[in-house]
Amino acid sequence: LTNEQINEAGHLTIGGVDADELAAKYQTPLAVYDVSKIRDQIRRFKSVFEANGVDYAVSYASKAFAAVAMFQVIDQEQGHIDVVSGGELYTAIQAGFPMARVSFHGNNKSREELTMAVKHHVGVIVLDNFHEIELLDQVLKEQDASSAVMLRITPGISAHTHEYISTGQEDSKFGFDLKTGQADEVLQKVLANSRMNMLGIHAHIGSQIFELNGFQMAAKKLVEIAANWHDQYQYQPEVINVGGGFGIQYTKDDHPLAPEDFVDAIVKTIKQSAADSHLDMPAVWIEPGRSIAGPAGYNLYTIGSRKDVPGLTSYVTVDGGMGDNIRPALYQAEYEAVLVDQPTAVPTETVHIAGKYCESGDILIDQQPLPASKPGDVLAILDTGAYGYSMASNYNRNPRPAVVFVENGESALVIKRETYADLTRLDQHLPESF
Ligand code: LLP
Image 1: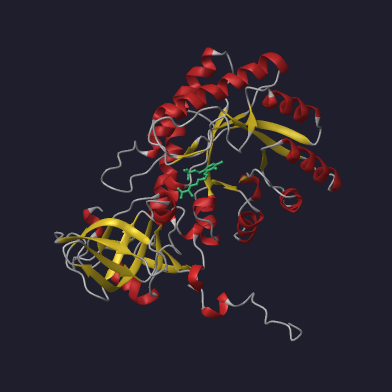
Image 2: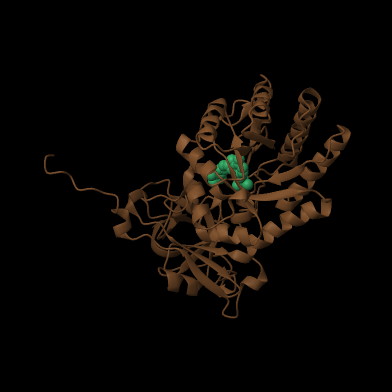
């Protein structure tokens, strides 16, 4: 929290609006995004490329948080997006997002999804496996169309030291294997296919990464592949896409580089490696999700019940939980929280912040120092913008929260709160014959 986020009443503000007012106006649990933080992070990424004089795309990984309004903000910032499903693509279409700036990822895109992507002229389809090449070839023939493609390769870089959500190791389910020559085989297939326009090469090594080294190794590897392809097949990728994964600070114990510093190091590595291999400098694309959406997001909850186990521990329970943020239960993810009407007060106790879901594992924060709190107080969990709402569920038939965007002192509802009627909308009564 910065000082500017505390108003005269001593309350937490988000985007210039008192968080207590947001909770009163939109009810809790509530997901709130500070839109200027989203814009700032995209601009910081862009300025890295501009300072290095490199062609680029900042492609927001929309799995972190996809919504019509989010895509509109990314569009206003001239960003690209990556989508991984027909549903994310549909959301982008609804948002009027320019399809030329969409990349379509995924390790099992269906024929329907590929048909949709080709029909809407999605900018680039990232090929992940051999089955998909056949499918896409059929879809392109059916529509008498062509498409730009990229090849996702598995760089064979594993996360030795950290248990991050890793995807680049050799036995990963994603991408074409390098060692066994799959990547070369697929390149030849694509170059020989007149409907596929080979744009570049992609790798994504994982998420919430704190170490620069893995990114630099992946970047070098991608240039090495490009150089090989240039020598062997006289083909040079126009784009090297290094994926996302730039770690962010969730708690005081996290000390990552700033996301843009990761990118600066990656760009410099690619520049140097390309020069060493006498390759033309390719465009560099990145796909940050967490680092754009995460720090911009706050989850607001109302405190309800409390359980004290004397001499042992205390549970302070809020009106949401694993249905709106599964990350603590799923990944032991850690967060920090404040009381919105006294965010800087000195803590007097350390409590578990428990959710309302019927599972012992539904603990949002395991050890949270807090000043004295009472039922009705609003609690803000910080940095919840990535993979919170986007992974939300209706477990226990709880409606998913509303989402609000805030900027320059103004708030706007961008996703309505689900109603009970929404929860049974798809249910069908049992037929009389049963
Ligand atoms: N590009 C590709 C191909 C990806 O698979 C991902 C994330 C990204 C970009 C964006 O990575 P980011 O910048 O957000 O780290 N649900 C997990 C994270 C899963 C990430 C999956 N892929 C979590 O909550 O930590």
